[in-house]
Image (cartoon, rainbow, N blue to C red):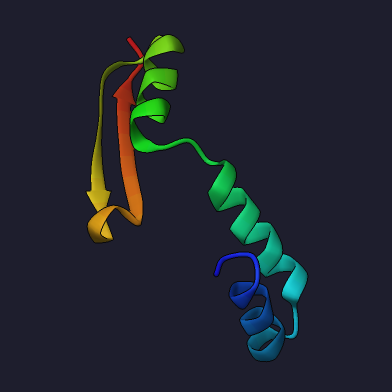
Length: 66
């Protein structure tokens, strides 16, 4: 769906299939919630947590650098 329908819809609606191909690829390459949390902890952030939004479609990550 993401690599075929999304660019097609982007072309039909916005006249720009390439941006929607990029969107699909960037979504695929983005780390999941736990991986991003681990990356933030590895970077020295503390009290790292995340909250899923829209049933996990997006997530808000927070952390504190002391």
